[in-house]
Length: 295
Image (cartoon, rainbow, N blue to C red):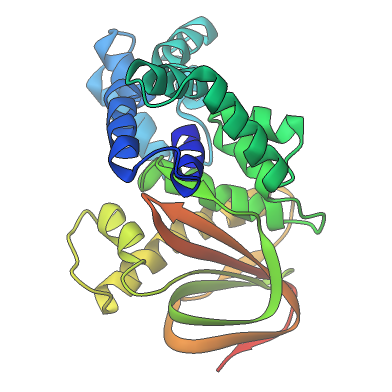
């Protein structure tokens, strides 16, 4: 994930070419593999145990390592060992860029300082981004005091990393009370709270979610693509509703809906998080306890 943030900024500043970035990302994808695969290759887990935990992640918002420990398949020490084998994303990126002689360490550090100033990031925010941890990174971009928003945005991002790709980066969340879109998949939840979660995109952007999630190759945005993204949203909302139920908060999930070439308007401002999935921009839209209409 750090490669996506830093790499695209360096391209924007003409410090890296798109081809150089692709080479760096390729090197990272070859070395940073999923924890389950490492655990099987190190003979910490069997194939069936790793598959079981992967299936659980579709119903429980938990990290692979935490579930493996809870099931008694791994110890804390073994999980720590596996995380070390995955490698530190910041150091991995720096080392790859220097080894390929694209930039010097001084040039990279200056670019990161410029990035921090340009986007008004604190030292804590930069540490979070360098960690490669999705929850820590999300906290640098999603600063919302109203309840549930940060939780639901974070849940959506974790599921993109789990089921779509870890090759994502994002812009800071913003507010609006009117949002026009080309394509939108969505779902509402109602009862103690009225929650709306949607994912929108221009052109064929929704394919970046639909194809990997459905494990099918779609050519253009059609009803099958809308359905695939809606099903992905349903997974996110199911996990969110489950967490709320533990807090004795009742919420019912309504059937997913999709729209094209319309505008969402609200009596108050709702939140939108731009997310780039392998370089393709989609936007996650969340409105909680506000009246809105799509026209």
